[in-house]
Length: 177
Image: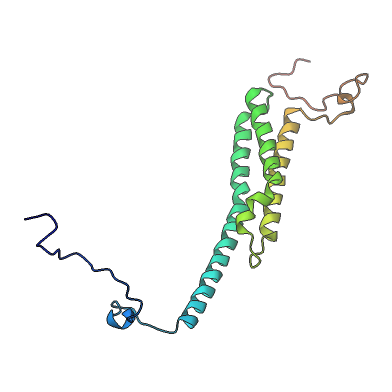
């Protein structure tokens, strides 16, 4: 037998231009499908999709706004673990705690860009995001102060002044008077 002649293939489909005939009436609808007015269903479905997309965007905006809280807790724990003495690790953690909120505050617009929609109010999530990042920056400044790296006395600024006297000191053991 010559190749391609003689046997008709069962799976072959004859493709021809059926634009002149009505193909909708000859092909039955699949089980579970009912034809209805496309305008009413499409409009209601589109409205429902837009409403669900709006709700999803609002929810995600709040999740992004609350993300700095997790970072705040982690940074606080890392600063506590670093201790209160000045060494490379504690300084690195402290400056990281200062740099992350500063870079996050500089990119507030980019962070909330995916949620920009006239129906989604992003003002409250943005304010929460900014407040949490300012709290994280405050935590970093507090750590700088506990390390003694902030100039808080007049003698830190003027060379001719004597350093401030320590008001308290702690000691243990038996007093030797």
